[in-house]
Image (tube, rainbow, N blue to C red; front, side, top):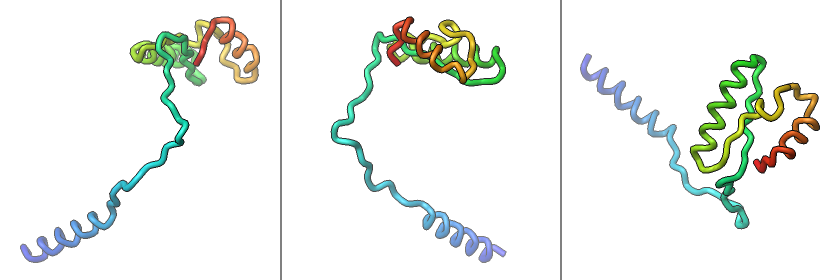
Length: 101
């Protein structure tokens, strides 16, 4: 019984080690630079059917954005109607508020 257990463990280790592949390299565009929104107004947008869930999500996301140095603004404070068919009006509200991201 002990021999069967050891044999099973050995095959399991072998199988698991064959499944893992090391990360060899990555690629980055030569002209890519990190975005810097420090101090900028950034809209926090959450798409949800439930209005209270949307507002709560946007509040949490805006706080996280602010925690990273930008000024997070919940979208519902700029444009309460979340209807995707009103994209042009939403863009206009963002522009009026001076949102950069």
